[in-house]
Each structure stands twice: as structure tokens, then as C-alpha cells.
Length: 85
Image 1 (cartoon, rainbow, N blue to C red):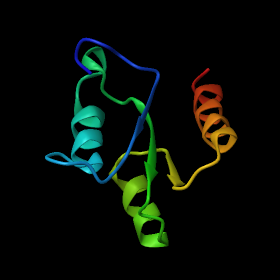
Image 2 (image 1 turned 180 degrees about the vertical axis):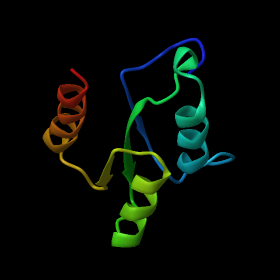
Image 3 (image 1 turned 135 degrees about the vertical axis):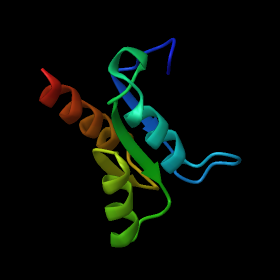
Image 4 (image 1 turned 90 degrees about the horizontal axis):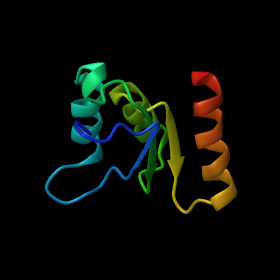
């Protein structure tokens, strides 16, 4: 994210080596010029209320549980970019 600054990051939480919590921590804490404070969607099979709360408190703005309908994901991303403008 230092070289490419996405408008929105969509990330799974359960990934090998580095989970989505670590990824968002690094991205959210980085300086703005290095891609910090990126808008982010947690797309994950961790669907309990406590999982949602953890994702949101970790830096994700939206928590979308799997399986997800494609239109739901599009709406989630659009809602983030609309708020940014």
C-alpha cells in the first residue's frame, strides 16, 4: 500500500501468515501519503457479532460476512466512497 493507494481495501480476515487485522493495522496506522487511513471492508466468514465488533474496532469501516451476494458487496463499497466525497 506504500506504492499503490487504493480508495477502498477489501480484505479477508483469515489469511495465512498475516491476518486481516494485522493488514488493516498496518494500513490504518501508516501516514496518509503511504496509503494510511484507507477505507476498508472486512469480507469474512467470521460472522458473529463479536467478530463484527472486532473488525470495526480494528479499523475496518464495514464488516460483510460470507457468503456474500455480489450486489451487497458493491453497495458496501459504494457507501464508503459516497461518504468520502
